[in-house]
Image 1: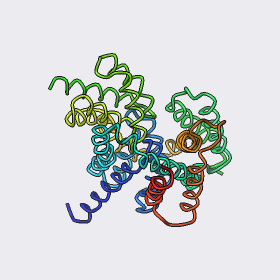
Image 2: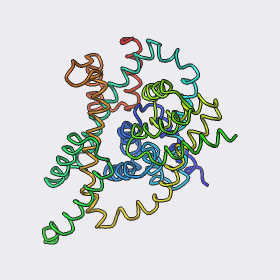
Image 3: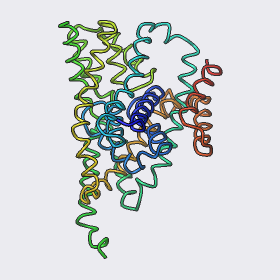
Image 4: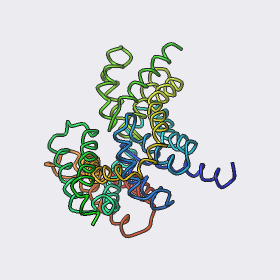
Length: 189
Length: 181
């Protein structure tokens, strides 16, 4: 293994470690950070690839944050990067929780920690706004996609008990039917 | 040793059946841990609270907490390893095919339907996670004004400046610890 490859693997590990350390709320909450680090800063992934990874990570069994890290890092540097990236995403939680569980009562009742958590929660809301702003171009490409978006949104908010997997599969099937059979003539012209 | 192995297997099950969000596996955790007499109901409530207040994925936090409470650091390692193992195995198995087939035009057609749906899911995450932070007592109650101001300021900084988002999150945490305690 050459040095530039080793350095890349180390960067992958440190990136997901950093993301794991600073994301509160798991899978969905880490998306804005993955986007900032892997797409914007490093250029390892483009925005539409990230959207595909998110869809796969949510539909597959397993912990979404780990799925997202493993798939993203696989794209960046293969199986070794995927394992390192997955471990990087999990280790901060593991280390923090060991200590927090050991000193549970003291930590939860500490006023400074509660204040810090409130501050962080505001920043997390801002991260979502940031991601939505950036992913708009690759996700909402035309009126059809806008329609898909509206229908999905209605389903998610009106019937919260619907499994996310069915919503994603529904979007995929409708997209396939629409582009392959209904809109095919238009695109061939 | 048998107990550690049992804990490991419980969390492999939990990790495997967690689909689309850590909280979805809470009923399963209750079944596996409380019904088997490993944890009390109060301990699972503590587990949920603490898993939400600490960084990282809910399932990993909960696994580490449960393992640590039951059998110390070795228990924590066994539970966490169990919880993440299905993710690693499944993703490594499909990763190679996943990026290969993503170029196929039928798959592209399907993805054109999936992308706007995922965008809606992210928006849902914004409302549930961001919304719960800004409106801690529900959307009909008044917002947590300092958190709302922090969110607005952070969003403006992310949009208009090139500061790293993680730096902005850290700054909000420090500000919160000083001003919101």
